[in-house]
Image (tube, rainbow over all chains, first blue to last red):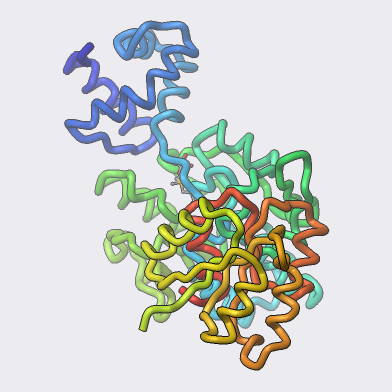
Length: 272
Length: 122
Ligand SMILES: C[S@@+](CC[C@H](N)C(=O)[O-])C[C@H]1O[C@@H](n2cnc3c(N)ncnc32)[C@H](O)[C@@H]1O
């Protein structure tokens, strides 16, 4: 059965408004493959039924549609290089300028938590706590479902191996049944919280380091710019924003400039 | 020059799969069916990296690993264990015997890629 054009437009509108996701004409197949399980769960027959419930204002349906349409793909130490750069360049530079020996870090669009736990493992293994440093890692996502998984901190062997080196696995995970559980000393270093980046983030305060990788790429140009500007205003004066290496954001328009020698790294540009 | 990988596993299915995936990511692959065959192959030509199974007839992976590390030039080769054993104690044992990385079977292309990158041959 084909999707009515007005229903397709409803999904396009709702997704753009709720999560910033851009859906292009011709992506009906994506809607179908991702939303049919939602239809089943809610006991409606098809996408038309989903559209009807959204029009009637069902918040549960809306939430499930937004979740089902997002891409939550992630892995531990994803792309490797960014984490090496954090360890070798970004973190040492930040630590040189902070007399209070405190770092605030934010993983924005954290999906199932691998990025945030990778940061926690990195900081732990750098041993900076022994030098008197304190750090907070906040991790946020729009999706309740992925946050539940993130908080549970249990991963399949498949997920764990996609990024965690074997010695790190032995140090920071334990095996539980068929899964690998992040040990408490790493798990407790990360706080998870639900947050839609379209709603602004000023209330979170300022950060020394923000990772927002592979999130903006799903947004349209206007949304990308406004979220990027928000991220900028959450940066401490010399704080660093790290985007995915292949992303081409409107950095200058958002008041950011490239950080030399760090792929995907940005700092606040001139002006306030 | 293409990097070389010696795939050591008594299962021809695993050897074929690993070899296909590794060739796709740019390795030249050779194969051995047990630890002894692997050592013989290394005496002729040392590969850059070895994907090494644990349980095999004739000579198992751990014994092969220990013997190989004592060879001239055997310190330099990167060794990635690849086994169905997935207890922490077993992973520990392999690392202590001199493995650089450890893959729990089953694996896929992503996992191979990450592990090969982590040991620095990719
Ligand atoms: C592809 S994952 C990236 C995960 C991780 N940052 C990484 O690079 O591996 C993108 C995540 O962004 C989240 N996301 C999408 N739109 C969002 C929004 N408007 N606000 C907050 N998170 C959002 C999705 O739920 C998803 O978990």
